[in-house]
Length: 122
Image (cartoon, rainbow, N blue to C red; front, side, top):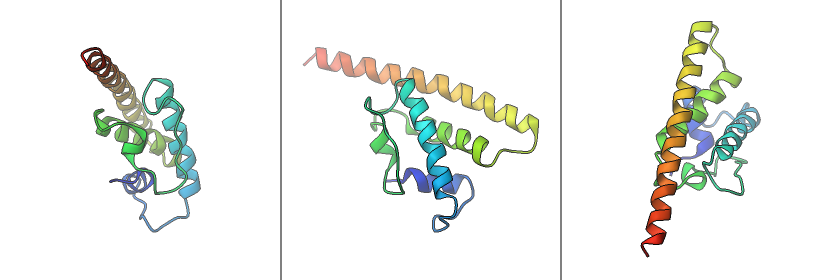
């Protein structure tokens, strides 16, 4: 299972054993997880990480396409933690984030609909 914190650190180019920025990154990750919860992704009671023990499947069920969520969290954390200096690069990342958010919502709605349908057929 893949740690949320470790995977985001890796995508940011930070070694797993470098803990200098963990607090900052954890705060940014939790902000993004809260935003995802507001659009219906993740546990209904909310979810936050405290360290590297939390894994992606703790946040979302395996039925949902995790790669969308990982990319969404990574790109949002990158914009806050280590933004590119080019405004064109920032705009490209923002467009990708918007596309990912839409796809995540569609995926979450599909999974929710399938779950309701399966419960009705039981």
